Length: 598
Ligand code: DGT
Ligand code: CA
Ligand code: CA
Ligand code: ZN
Image (cartoon, rainbow, N blue to C red; front, side, top):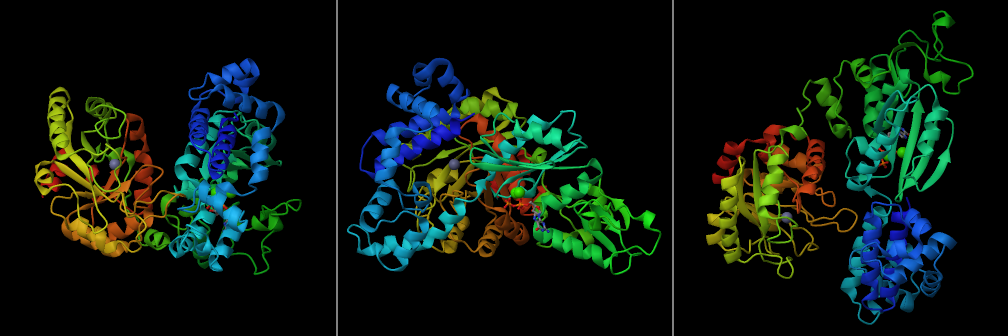
């Protein structure tokens, strides 16, 4: 399916037009790109079956754009796009990843300084050349210097929320096939890291070639990068997926090894060495009877190694396990350490001491504390959201639409009066459902840390989420957020950093200080589960948990479909060692009410 590839081209088209100062047209291309990307059918099938007419049936794709799409699918290029690229030969995707640099700025930078890459942009900024351009200043130049490293990194890593569904699709494609005996994801995707370098998939099978064939025939794959006998890599929507096939007896050891992190494995391996064991991707072996040269003193027939195998030296001594991951940790007298913790930040020591946390699970979440409706920028009515929450199995639901304030644009935010009107609408819905419904608002934290909704209104609401939506590049914002956390009516600090993964770094915060203030004030810190945010991130959750602060896992859902994002919040909280007792919405309705009233 080539929808993402075509959408990417249309977006490039839009950016290049915008860089040349063309108006309106760029947005038409962007809207078309969105709809092509989300279209359920493969664009190449539409084009080959029904030509331009069929492609133009896609919402927002007009005849002109449809013609260009068909031209691309038939000839491999779009003549007009090639011309635009020649006029402006820049790495648009990379340059516009720098916060504050849009397509127009890229056009100017090329015209004035012939900047085409991030490296050239950085060099020009360091040489003080940016601030000399008309309309640019020292501040713009400093902004570029501050953000170029972030942009470089963002180009190399994918958001968990994009990579995880893809990993699950490829698992679905492989699962149940005859050659596939064992199957799991490994690497950072299994550790639920917020960004992913590549997706690692592991299969236990006696027939590597059959599995590789199956994998490279995955219809969603855009390109096969490489394919061997036991491994292969494909690219899907710009995300690299690596497959490794191992024999089923070594599946557990390979899973342990390829889950990482590298730092976790190094520490674990050293612990094994101390105990006369050898731990690697092939298994766990007792090597206490071996001489230091790796050869067995005992009869050579005890040696499981094979002379034709280059890795033979890795399979020495007595095999203690390897089929299951639990055998790897078990050989060290340890329980299986949850993948989210495997970052070598004390989890192995905790496991040795029998002190691993009893991590929060998705099933322990009893309701959402931060959601929207069509009263502000959501897509559904109050009744629809509440009913969907009940259907989802929740005990309660909180309605927290945007209040007007800094960073909330147009008429998205509700006035005090509208919030009070909504309270009546919520009360009416309450009559019809079995779950508890709390009514509140998402208020705004201004640049100084003040909450911009009136105290009178806040005092009357069941729940108040306060979030920063403006002044998100002000540098150290710890004092600002501590002020918000101490506000007597604020129950939850929403998406505290305001970051957007790969797009905006967000506020700089000393999380230890913030967590202590939050614990002190009995204000919960949010883990916003929207996959574009994951804010707080795992390390910050850990600071919150260690300070004894309460954590809230919120989807910030704008429609019922987004309730499912809760898993990203739960796994992010798990990366921060959170247990159910740390989490506000793992409490029942009475427990929640007690916190909100306290
Ligand atoms: P990523 O893909 O950058 O988000 O991070 P990972 O952790 O998925 O890293 P990746 O894909 O390079 O490798 C997967 C795992 O395999 C990694 O977490 C640990 C293991 N691994 C790979 N190469 C090495 C190595 O050279 N030494 C050790 N100890 N482990 C390795
Ligand atoms: Ca990986
Ligand atoms: Ca990999
Ligand atoms: Zn929100």
